[in-house]
Amino acid sequence: MSVFFRRSCGAALAYAVATQGAFADLSANDVWSDWQTYMGSMGYTITGEQNTSGDVTTITNMTMKMDLPEGEGSFDMVVPEMTLTENGDGTVSIEFPESFPMTVSGQAEEEEFSVDILYSQTGLEMLVSGSPDDMTYDYSASKLALALDNIMVDGEAMPDDALDLGFEMINLAGASRMQIGEGRKVDQNFTAANLTYDLSFQDPETGEDARINGKLDQLEFEGKNVIPEGFSLADVEGAYEAGFAFDGIFTYGEGQTSIAGTSEGEAFSMASSSDGGRFGASIDAERLAYDVEQNNAKLEVTTADLPFPIEIAMAKAGLKLEAPIQASEEVEPFGFAMNLTDFTMSDILWSMFDPAGALPRDPATIALDAKGTAKILLNFLDPEVAEALEGSDEAPAELHSLKINELLVSMVGAKLTGTGDFTFDNSNTEEFGGVPAPAGEANLQLVGANALIDKLIGMGFMSENDAMGARMMMGMMAVPGDQPDTLNSKIEFTKDGQILANGQRIK
Image (cartoon, rainbow, N blue to C red; front, side, top):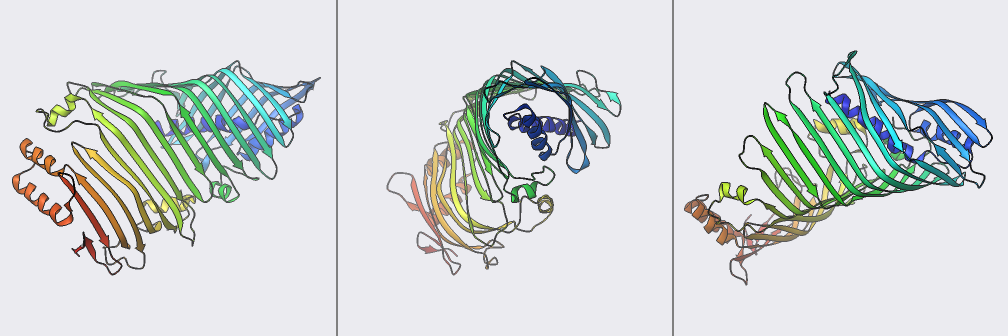
């Protein structure tokens, strides 16, 4: 059930996103014509009856159909009536019915399925202005919603409580500029007061059930999209090679999610919240980039296995990635950064392994910021290459350099910081067991290690012999710093294969 459900929702949401830039032109006839051209390029077959009376053109029984990738099914939609009104001032107003159905059907895991999804709107207004090759449209709505309506599996209707899904966006407004030439350039932005979602399911055989609901407030999106001429969803690699590109950022003010249900006869629940975040992404034929961040995240989990809730929190969590994705003979830059800042957990969790409070319970932080260069050996946009990688030992890239701008691990009273700068010899992979031979240095500082070891001995987590071995290793790799319980270490990798620790050869 989960496989065809994911595909069903994916197709419906893909339609909703695609149509953001399709309802725009300056005359009713041109709007309908451009609608057919644009959606046709997205893989849809469109039909409808066109009638014009005065300044109003009506499209009745507008049918849109698209085959899903790899012949796994199809997406169908029928809009009973769409009207396009020429306002006499060079603008066109577009109106849609308050609701209409969408259907996803096909076969998954040897089961024939059909999923009906209801699209509905309240107060949707859309106005188009500009010129035929440079159109701007503005839209607003009190509400837009998607709701699961009916599911058929092998000709039988699933019970109403087996699966339910709904999305609802409130008080949204947006604008889009579409420049049409050899392809399309689309600049978009929108805001919404909030987005709510609700998912529930019950397994009719086991009785296990769950309900997930959540809310995001103060949504904002800005993005740019380049859609080349001849674009086809059936040929993703070809679309990128022809110039497809996307760059956008989505932000929200606050978010909450709650989950509750039963599993193996036992109840469980989870609640999470955050004070906002962002998701940025950009991609073209050459590079891929992500920028994700969440602020003041909190999580509480209750299960039958524990007599108390699990509570954790984090001031900030982030991930950044920028990397080339196309095979090339040139060495290209990449970057990676992550942070888990001021992580805390409840005293009840601490007491499970530290009931006496011997360890400092200050917020923990882990951070890494690195950049480098690499030569990409494979085209990650090629579906066959991506599939072959899953069962292959072949390296997808050659690492040529790596610079660590920041390394930070701070927890339980100890703190490790460091930087590093290395190059790699890809012609020599024997020296270090299959890894390209590095050359460069890392500078590390460790504060509070001896005090932490003493506490672990007192708690019974470390024996005296283990502690002695750890201290001997730190003595070999590091030298005392200027401050108490501080160790500094300079690790060098030379081009002739040597490894030096603070000037002393260890390999």
